[in-house]
View 1: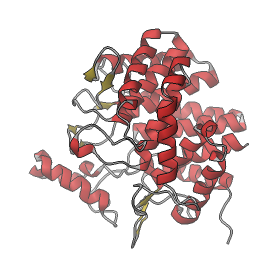
View 2: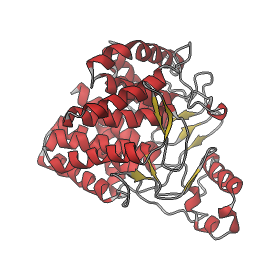
View 3: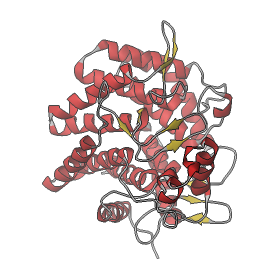
View 4: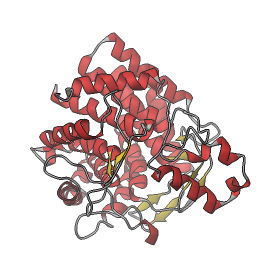
Length: 390
């Protein structure tokens, strides 16, 4: 049997997500378990971390047995919005416009009140190795994706409400996030107001947001901060072209999708400033070459880590497709390679019901259909690939 076309795959995945009202589970939502929350372990850091990792790594989906509700996630809704906007730019119908604006409206309703500016967070308590973020803590990752969706919606529909909220997100970045490094020409933004981490892709997402908004408002101080944050990251690139996840010793790993985040943000910042185009060009090229040579096989197999074949993660596949589409100026074969990754993913990670599996491991496949981690990213990737092809 022939695999479905890109367009059919996109349509079936969109229908699958829409039927579920874009709500679902997440690899990190284990602390939403009513069973776990009913125990005193909810107050113990090691117990929270262990419970989260147990549910994330289990080959079986434990969420039904442990009463984890299916919910919408702000970053997921932002990605669904970006997918809908890309689909509208390709198709240009009243229905696709309405679909995109409806998702943007949902995103606006998910803002966290009481902050210096517009911000979004996750719908679950999150215990990382570095800090604990209670449900609803504003963080830069969903905020940056929301701001990007709002700027693209402003460009498409010319509704100034969208730009005003995206500009407000810059106030959150500048006032509520911590500066974990600051010199005359470098800064690093924290992940949330609660931590002082130096995570490269997270700080760059803040920078990307500032730079992107500055092109619409003309505020040079926003762009200046974006360039200083990009400088902090590019100056800490490794000799082989890679970036670790962060500066701490326990953040020393290198993976495909966080590398793709760094490349995407650097590329977007460069497009906002002629000075940035020259200053960060070599770092972007070196990073792209390391990423493309290290994280993929010739047939499109997307690796999670550069030095091992497993696990194969649909999130890594989807971010790779988006990155190749946006970085096509660096590689004339980028779109063809993005198609190869998409084809491989459709054949190896897609369920016949239309959704994508979480991970393929050496001896098993984890078929849990995570909504934010997998479906929203894959829908966005397919939408962007279809847009650039058609």
